[in-house]
Length: 300
Ligand code: GLU
Image (cartoon, rainbow, N blue to C red; front, side):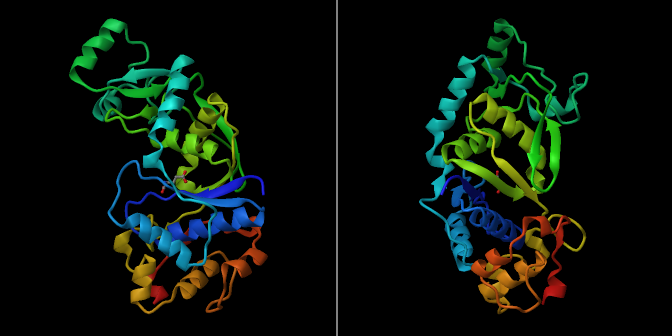
């Protein structure tokens, strides 16, 4: 088996049905293309006690299996530093002393899209840098030489998005999400990234960074999210949204898998399905292109 897909949850709480649905789709994509399926725990910030194990248990309860050991980002700090060194040696980094407030208040650079870092600290003199460093720890940013990058997505087609001088390491020393994802996807041999479409806009940054680091750019599929009945992203307050919540209502994991499969138009209401059966039915072209509206009241 060449190549691998993955699911990379942040252990900040229990997975909700939208996350589980994305995990199921990622598993289907990987298995349907004869790839390994790897798990990575993105625990560089916002860790909730016990979350990691419950997330793994929930995936297993649905019948999703994975290959090899689970990778924890917190155990990989030296690898992120190595990538930073590589970029620094290539003249691709600079220290940034801006607060969030300063960035929001700064006039945006000409041609820079909203939300892009305006480059305030890009060309500080050594003297200015020393002065600022005395009062504040520096974040490290990428010195990007483009303002956009185009990727190809299995569901979205060609997608062009912003690449600014994004953060590689935060002021508190934590490696930034975009850096860690790219380094780890490269190290794990991941060539298929299936995840929620809320991350589509980060993807040009990640693909550009992979290129700078000499890593292959994976295939991407960004899948629609689960929303509540008001069209907002599904959250804890939306009722019985976790597997544990559903089990408390008397639903078995198999029944929950059935609900997820039905939301993907891969099963009939009430039908008993297994991941293996869904694999036989899986057709990426037939995946719903619109968000899944989860209405707990209707589900009960
Ligand atoms: N850890 C991220 C999340 O839970 C996903 C990162 C990724 O799939 O690249 O939203």
